[in-house]
Image (cartoon, rainbow, N blue to C red; front, top):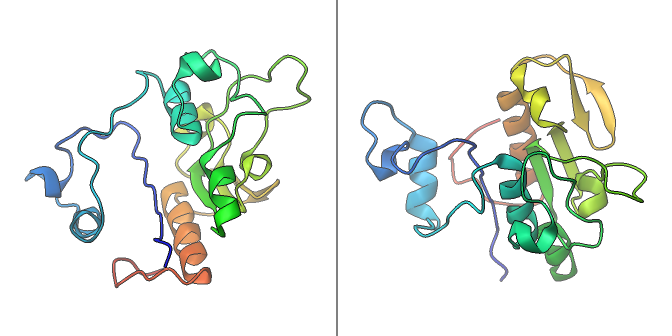
Length: 179
């Protein structure tokens, strides 16, 4: 049986900022349980010090010198560059992204910045650009290719979307979260 893959990217999270790595000042019970029941990558380093090249590396599995995405001022991941979602699709995986889709500027000769549905993802709920996530209670969120009114805390809305997606695709939540 194929394993379920849930990749959680926590922007700005340090090594010992979660309870399973020793943080005592606050509790992170859901992340702690995921760590206990899943896989923790101890040698998983950021590909860059800025978010756009780091996201591009996570999406493509390639360093910025190979994708052309080397700084936050870079252009978007090239249209021909395979993403993790495109690599998983032929193996029967359903793919979704919930939160922020970090994109760069439009590449020369490209009509528009490509969103997650153009890059192999089946579902998307969240924000399209880095500056959009300043407002934690946005009036609108992207739902697929449509910008729809939203009402609530962005992190909760995206988490609820991810939980719905996992339930819809038969992923066991094992009581970690409800939604």
